[in-house]
Length: 194
Image 1 (spheres, rainbow, N blue to C red):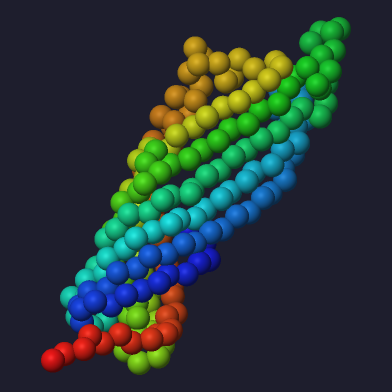
Image 2: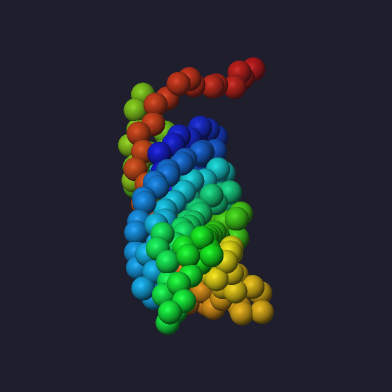
C-alpha cells in the first residue's frame, strides 16, 4: 500500500500487535482520442492504509497475521475535451463537449486482512527482518462518475453507467499485498516481579 511504518508490541513469545500507516501516490497526465475528439486528462492513483494487525508465530520465523485497515485505495481519471467535434456541417466547440471524472474506491473502506509472514516483526536483539504476503478483502469496487456538457448523460443515474462499470470490475474484491520490513527494537519493557 506504499511506504510507511508500524509500531510493534510483542506481548507474548508467539504473539505481537502492530499499528501502522502507509501511503503512496502517483499522478500521470494522459492524452487520447475518442470519436474524433481529443482529450487531455490525468490518472491519479492513491494507495495507503491505517492498520491494526495481530501476529501469531507458529514457529519463531513464520507467522500468520490478521487484522483490519482503513483502506485508502482510490483511483480517479479525469479529463476534458481539447478539440471540437464535427457533426456534419455543425461544429461543437470543446467547452460544450464537457469534462468528466471517474472515481474508483473500495467497496469496504474498513477492510479485513489476512497474511502469512516469514521473519520477525520485531527483532530478538536490535534488528528484525520480515517478508509478508497477504490480502485485504475490500469488496467489489465502488465507482462514481461526474460529467458535464455533452458527456453529461454518462453520469446520470438512469443510464446506470457507474453500475455497469462496477459489474465489469467486481471480480477485484481482493487487494493483494507484498510487504517487506526492517524493524528496530527501541526499548524493552519488563514487568516487575515480587
